[in-house]
Amino acid sequence: MTDYISRYSRDGHVFLPRKFQGFPEIKEALIANRMQAGFMVAPMAMALRSQGVPIKIVYLGHRYGSAVVVQKSGPVRSVHDLAGKTIAIPSRFSDEHLILVRALRKNGMKRSDVHMVEMAPPDVAGALAVGAIDGFSMGEPYPSQAEIGGYGRILFLARDYWPDYMSCVLVVRQDAIDRRPQAVQVLVDGIARSGLWLDRGRAHRDAAADFVGRYYFSQPPALLRWVLSRDLQRVVYSPLAPRKADFDLVRDLMMETGVLDRRIDFSEYVDTRFADGAAAATAWRYEPGSARAE
Amino acid sequence: MTVKRTLALVAAWAAAITALHLTLNVDWSSLLNDRLPAARRKFHVAYIPVT
Image 1 (cartoon, one colour):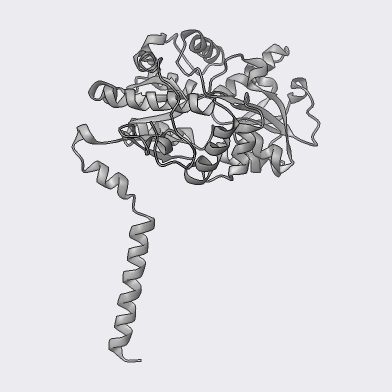
Image 2: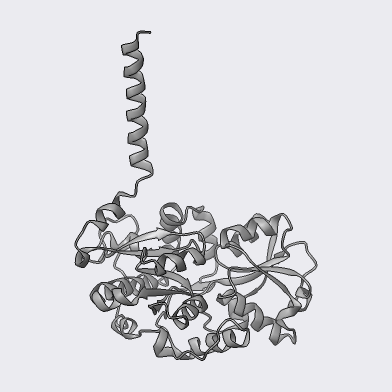
């Protein structure tokens, strides 16, 4: 979205977006310096930093927007019913994994009560439709895709178990931060302004669903309208500044589930100066269809 | 059909396919960006189609 609008701005277009189908591929591209920045799930970014990969989290992509979905006509009606079921997650290093663990614990269950399998996000809706899995924990638009398709039902939303839940974060390679901090700031400012623009109301959400679906996600705009506009709280785009308390919670859950082996400090994997720099950002002044943005 | 005409058709077909390939499969924005001085290069930003 930031790419689309910033193309119409005078000096905001500082990056080239590249679509991937899974987080592991983004990880490899960042390590190889084929990508200088990228969106990935927060636990994966923290684990990579913990392993010495020179990246930093500089901003969030959104809050909420993840859900656990089960077969619509299946037997699962509550979290307790997940016992013994096969549930797909995007990665062990994902917030969607952690939200499932958190929900299980809050219902007196253990992680091992559920059979979790890793699956690329674009594959989960199809796998649920044919009965290859009993459910999935995934970011939008895949929960909505299963709902619209008539074969999936939301068991719970991330917000039901995790206030201020976050999922995708923006990471930037350390050498890019060191050499071109101004460009990183422009990128973060653009994302902050996009978030504020999206949270201004349904008309902006509908417009974003249209151009993001057609030009970036290759997904039907109607699906993204379902995600973004039916319930404006299903995904929110402000505030996106990284907060220590949110990340401490993720880190502690990662350690408890064995996907992080040391108590990495917030300042080691987050650089907050760009979020601080974007704190006074205002929403894009852009009307859908216009060829000018400020 | 003469040999000359056949060769002309093959050449035209190859040219058309090459043009289509260069249009559809080559990432020109990335190629041109990589030729810029480092300070002017745009970042490559990875994303997957989830919100």
